[in-house]
Image (tube, rainbow, N blue to C red; front, side, top):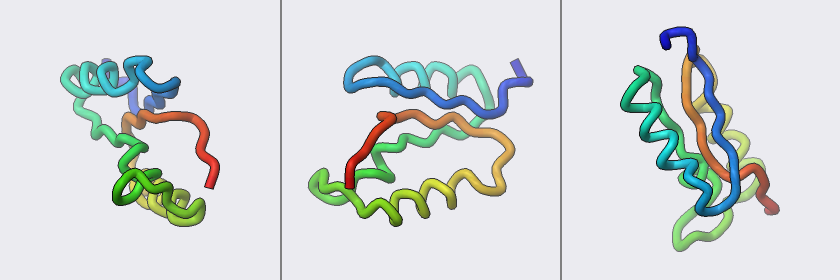
Length: 76
């Protein structure tokens, strides 16, 4: 399983994205990033599009492996 370096899990609310990412994270030595924590701010207010993009770019750059999970669309 060491060949798996970049995994993206997308889906709708309640589809099991977080559960699947946690299971994979237990089996693979790859960091997990939950996109909700980057897209949503305090009190579940949507962050600005540029802030979201910058934060996501920052966590993924210079990493050769990751698991990301989240909803595929946002509308700032």
